Image (cartoon, rainbow, N blue to C red; front, side, top):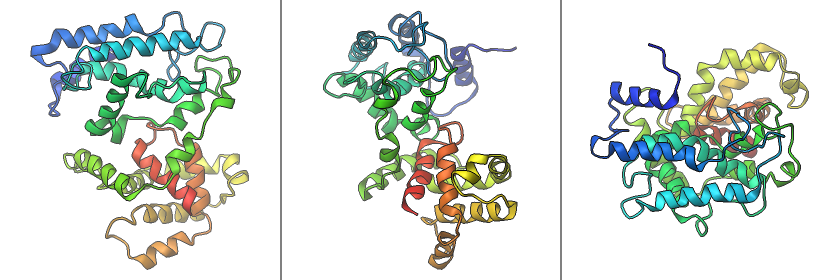
Length: 317
């Protein structure tokens, strides 16, 4: 049997796999279904279809008016308020299929809406307190989301500059409102932030023996597993050699890839300080990290926490 409707697939996965979370709990199943259906009533209609920039643009390729976006955010906040006394999710204290249905679109809105209109921020705690609490809960209480599924702001904002994802090119003023999302993502973590991030990662990786023990080590694992395809991609890219100064020699690229992976594993006991320092001295490792940062799409290529470790490395080398 072939299924293509996303929520039918979610229900089927919930039946087949026991991951410790019931997405359609029997005692609140009707509430879950109603919260899923509420999406169609709240999100804007008559917008251009798009796989990466949905519910953003009118038929002429221009962004929706600010008050249209504000109506969506206000009604979403009100919907979450109905069960906020029980918890931050759409059905209170339990993460369910309702959150799965809403998450892709609310995540994109958080990254993309500030680029369209001044003062439009879905994560504003003062204006949308229940929506803000939902974003916080998704990132801190659902490790499967924050470690694997969640995209990052810079990846979602790249889409806004590309024709073919619902817009008609670069909408007026959008480029001017692109803030320093990349700078935030590549900024060094404080000790407290690093500890909190590792705690979330531990919750995710402990039940998955195939996952590395930290976000940066997982980034290294992804690079090594895909190194042949990454090297081939670099070799056919004029941007990699011209703009980033990467070599066109396969052996040199492979060596730089291994050096970068070693540096990303610095927080493990696998390599001593001398080995890591030698890898830092590789003449192409900084350029490689910068190119990968430029080329990556999150979460297509890796999760947001792992991708951020490469972004930070590209900025610090």
